[in-house]
Every structure is written in C-alpha cells, then in structure tokens.
Length: 152
Length: 196
Image (cartoon, rainbow over the protein chains, first blue to last red):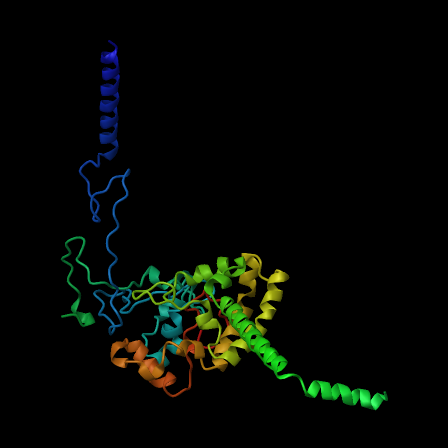
C-alpha cells in the first residue's frame, strides 16, 4: 500500500501551509485605531459618516487652529481650473455671501512675501479645513479647549 | 382640340374625381401621415435618450464619466436627470430648434473636433460657455422643469441655500446657472468668469 507516503505528504503540506499562513497573519498583537486587520485580508469598510449639514461656524479649540467646515462639501472641486470654496470664502464674495473670509495668512508665500492671490501652498482648502461628522473619538482625549476663544 | 379646351378638360378631370378615389386618397394620406409623423417623433425620441448621447466616445469618455460622480447621477432617492433632461428643452418647438442646432455637433464629431481627451479639455471653456449662455437666456428652464422655485420649502434648506434663494433667485436677479455651474461636469479654467 502506498497510502502512507501520500498521507504523510498531504499532512506535511497542510502543516506547512497553516504555519506559513499563521506567520503572515501574525500582527504581533498590534491593532490600528480602525480595528485589527492583516495584510492578507481586506478589511470591511466602515460605514460612511454623515457630514453635518450647514451649521453656524464652530468654535476653535486652540489658537491657530484651522477652523473646521460646518457644512457639506460634496462635489466642491478645488483644482487648477476652479476653487469652489473661494467663490464664497474669498474676500471678493465673503460680504455678499456671509461666509467667513479666509485669513490674510493665506496670501503669504512661504518666504513671508505677501501675494495678490491666494498662495499656492494655501490653495487646497481641505488639506487643513475638514468637514465634521458626529462620530465617537477613536482615542481618549483629555484636551481642554482654551477659554479665550470663547469656549466654555 | 384647341389648347384652351385641353386645359379646361384637364381642369374638369381634376375637379371631379370619383368619390371612391377621393376616399382612397384621403385614407392613404391619413395612414401615411400617421406613419410619417409617428416615425418622425419616434426617431426624435430615440435621439433624446442617454444611450444615444453616449453612443459617441466623445460624450461617453468625457462628460458622461464626469457626470457619473455627481448627484444628478447617483443620490439617495434614485431619481436621475439624464443628458436630455438638462440639455434638450421639453417644449416641442424649442426642442426642434435645439435639435437642428445640434446638427453642428454632428459636424464636430465627423471632423473630430474633440476626439481626444486633450482636445476636449482645450475646448471645454467654449463648450461650457455656450451651454451657460443658453441656460442664462432661457432662465435655466431645464433646471426648473424639476426644481420649481414656487415649491421650494426654505425651512428644509440649509442656511446658505435659504440666504441665496430667498434673495437673488427670488428677485429674479440671478438664475440657477449663475451659481450652480459645474454641478454635472467638471469646470473649465474659470479665470475671468463672474463670481469665480
């Protein structure tokens, strides 16, 4: 009977495969704040958070904090052709639209020179300014917003 | 027979057809009319579908791809506005005028005016301005086919929307397209355009 060698080879392959698989999925006990996932798996995406709709300006928590966006920005393009944000927040239109004006620091180049247009390094609004969603904190946070900016 | 009486005879012949022939001709004219008119309208309606519009790669690979990311393609309630809903007037006479004007687009397709992405992007400002002008002139009629100002509930709108809709739009000073540019396709270079 040749069943023994076949059995042994199969068993060997299975053991080798499982140990190999175990090695690749070994995360070393680490988890990201988005939950555990391994490199060989595609984690199921979280549900998309609902962006809050059109509120009044939200208070800042510390000096020099880029103010957050209190409205939805779906479909607002910011690219070389157009900047949707500036059609309200630009100085030219802010009075008419009632939007917060962009800070004058946005007109400064990185060498501190003041330009006549928004500086390219400040052009892409959502690099610093982000929309808000009602979502639980991913990590514990004990930061207290400073009082001089009108926080309680 | 003299020439005059020949003409007279012919005139008499034409003036007095037998009654059966008269009904026959009427019936042919009637059915022919139905077939022609029905066929014409059916053909017209076929050119008024999304499938027809994206039959050319110029539309499919450029404007259609961009439109697919927007709210008029995909949204919470599943109501869609397809190409003709915004780009072709609903009223018959206006529709025919637009369709005749569109023969220029056929010429553009035959001559390959925008047959590559680069050509299309270079030409986008011209195309966009033509469409903005058209919508400005008809007071954004195609928008208003669905978005009727009379029935807008400001209490359901966001602060920003209420502010603009209750002032500039309500007074007729501005029309939809003045603010809502680039909502279904990407924008061209907006340098020098009012409010941009």
